[in-house]
Length: 405
Ligand code: AMP
Ligand code: MG
Image: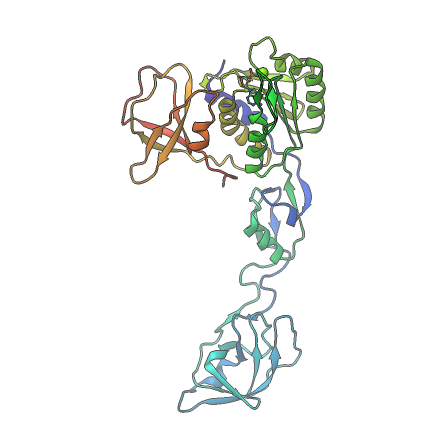
């Protein structure tokens, strides 16, 4: 048996970012960049107009006023996407749309609303400062400069930015292939009728969707009976094809707990088994080559808490992402249970504010999901002695849904 902290460290020590691959940018949502990306071009690529208006030479409007307008000949129109070869002539201007390239010779744009155009001539009633409404070439980034550094998360904003530089593919750390194997003779798919003694299989859907909340679709997801032969062949397939295997149930000391001996027979090297915590004491972690294996206890709250506390940081590390955990503290609103030699992860509800408070929920049993479903956080009680007192400050882990930042 090891401590929670020790378990965390051992997992992170064994989780190394996966081999980078070159991937279409549009498919790389949620992944980390494996290499620095230099900009292949200046951005903007041209001097362009920031407004619909008239491109001209600022010096031509010197002294313009309502009483003494300046009139310039409209030489042509420049839409976004046009590239005129004509130069601005003395006494001329160009009508230009937002994103239109500034014709050579022009140095400023006056907004259309401030100009009156009639019979091919535009009238201006005010002077302007040179450079008004112009977005200059290379103003945002210059060719060769660092666009995004290795390790950056490719969210939609980052993908948009790289796309604006014309980048189609990027070296990324791929999504890990994850296998989910839930075990138990008693398990029946929700929606199906139960025979006496059977229960509905909640872990499979819960952990499939927990993976999806992390942006990952399981590569395999199967429910296997407590049959050593079947369990062994499914586990072998998972080990052969995946980066991370979640074996759920059968990891304790019962007569039908086959997970550990099967992993051993498949040459999986045990890193640890059993963590001083509640729920989730029988947690197992091992590796075979580069494949990592978690044995999660089958009690649903244990399985979910272990997934959240250990599997998520591990998956993020495999993806080259920071573990990104939000850690905060809150004041306990009531008395709590006795401390013990185990770390307690208590299902809770957080009231944020200037003095955050945490409410412990009814139903702390490792078989009870109701309090996890209705709660929003885990209150963490480190090992110790004595009853938890009202007003004590506890570490709280918010159970943010979806991918963590
Ligand atoms: P185990 O870890 O296999 O000893 O299972 C511990 C408890 O969790 C038992 O009461 C099982 O019936 C229950 N359990 C195991 N797997 C699941 C599952 N997939 N869905 C719901 N309950 C489960
Ligand atoms: Mg079982």
